[in-house]
Image (tube, rainbow, N blue to C red; front, side, top):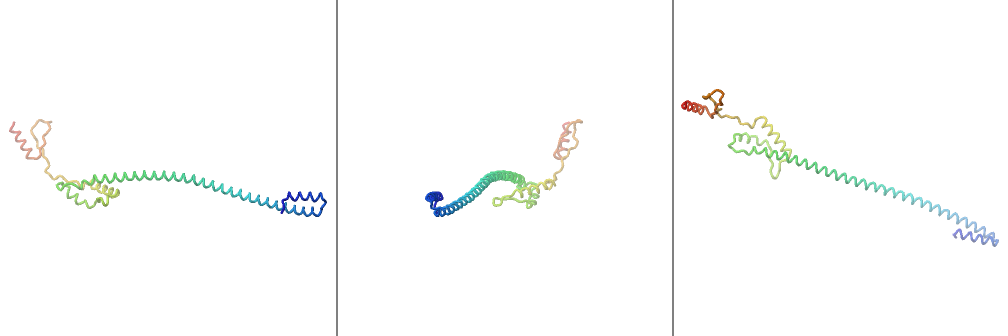
Length: 202
């Protein structure tokens, strides 16, 4: 279909020439062209609206992505912070574990006493009740803590104390002035001898 402007120009030309039939025909053609252009305008407007809506949707998605990116960065920072806290806690736990194990290592030296020690038989009798680690299976902090608790109970109860069965020292009266400190003797025989020798000197 011809352009509406061209049709209007032809209508004016035919009207000047007095060709009414041609004018009527051109008017009908102009109406059709006008309707066609109106439809095109409507379509363009609808397309423009769709594009605007699509642009709005894209803008909203971009905003969502930007928000998500910001949240992700915050999450990354929080994750990094939590990892640092976890590392610090693990370090503290390891220090505490090492402290307990080292305390047991020091205490366990009681099991290394010489056979001449009066406590040797008792120590050997209770030794199986404790756990001792090695290079292939190091002692855990929990095992070391349990060992320390057992050993403390034994020490508190006096189970590791060896009673003194030696002859008690005697201190017989010795010559001297009242109020003077009395000498100490390793045995009653030594005390008697000292007294005898003292008497001879006088």
